[in-house]
Length: 142
Image (tube, rainbow, N blue to C red):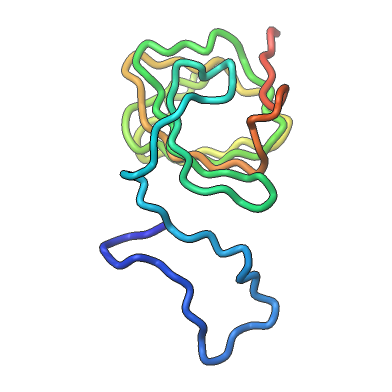
């Protein structure tokens, strides 16, 4: 991710590594220019997301804004790896309060507890596959 006023760009070094995956370089985008869109999953239909990057294998990075008074209602089965970072606000995941400056990791095929928040929050999220496919996130009543 960028940090500061200098934009990131690829520049060849005097001696590049032959095994470097330069074709997979994902340039930084100005997130202020990107539109907010609806989420693709039933559990977060009241949230908004802003796509930041997409990998060649379908993995994606986005900002997720969960609106106040959100209640997912049920647990979720996540058949994908997810990393997240809370930028502001919070979301209670079961008994755990995922709040500002917390990091989260959810391995593939985990059952995550019910998600709730009264105040809402903004989260940076990265997953390893395309979540727009039907059945990628499953509700779990149990």
